Length: 119
Image (cartoon, rainbow, N blue to C red; front, side):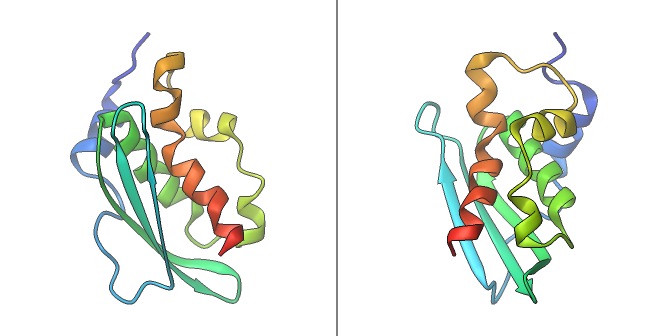
């Protein structure tokens, strides 16, 4: 199992959409209580669509890489369409096998996306 394949390491070293977004419309954070990983997503929403997204956080390579990949994937999509994103889709984006103990890390940003509909 190649948990830390090169693309994951690249997203961890140089995450896409990294940084605090000034004047974000929504700010949602999520903590993985099992390991202490923390991710905060910042959203600009226009007409029900994610116009822009960024994130900050601290944690393992897999949670930061997953946040980077998912933030790039959701940009421009409607909040309504985000409800259809499954754990399988996130695993497909990450593109590698994940041990059961690491699933919580890879799904950390998905938990944030699922909170969008409540805001």
